[in-house]
Amino acid sequence: MSIKGNQFWKQRSKHGRDKIFKTPDLMWEAACEYFQWCDDNPFQESVLAKYKEHSEIEEIPKIRPYTIQGLCLYFGVNKGYVNDFEDALKGKKDKISNDYSVILTRIRDIIYNQKFSGAASGFFNPNIIARDLGLSEKKEVIARVQVSEYDSMTDEEIKQEIDRLKKNS
Image (cartoon, rainbow, N blue to C red; front, side):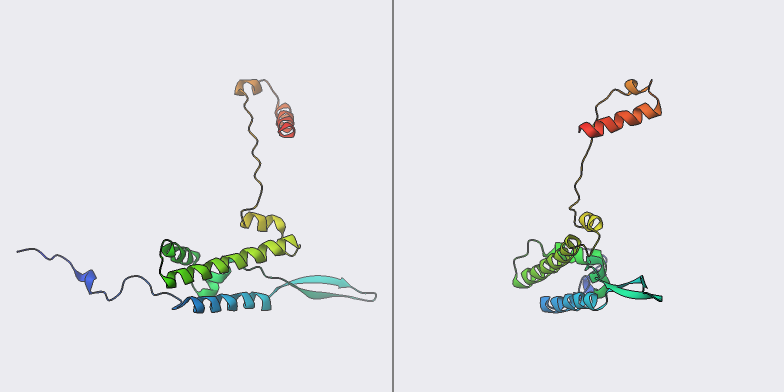
């Protein structure tokens, strides 16, 4: 006689969470709605406009950048859900998985392009967007100096030595 043990988990009719979008086309439609919402709802900057006789505050529309986080909020999921969904598609060869992968890649490309183009044209802060897109240059200064060399130096001399090393690198 074999002991069956706790097999309650087998009673479950399905495992895991349902897909939020039943088809890749529905995912694409929802992403397009998010992009359109961003375009239709720009940020508003209050600017003091001075005229000859008076001044008034004007609202200037500022383009809203597309973001993965904003898309996730629009979809009603978190970024981890989208990343996990995308990771689960890797290596799968069936048509539906490929279609979802194509849509997710297109979505990421559109977000990347909008941010990059917006920063390049001056609509977005280039430094912030470059960091977000992983484009910032990283310069590493390596100095190989015996610590004992600095023991006899004042703080000001150490600062000058650091500046000299930076200039020479």
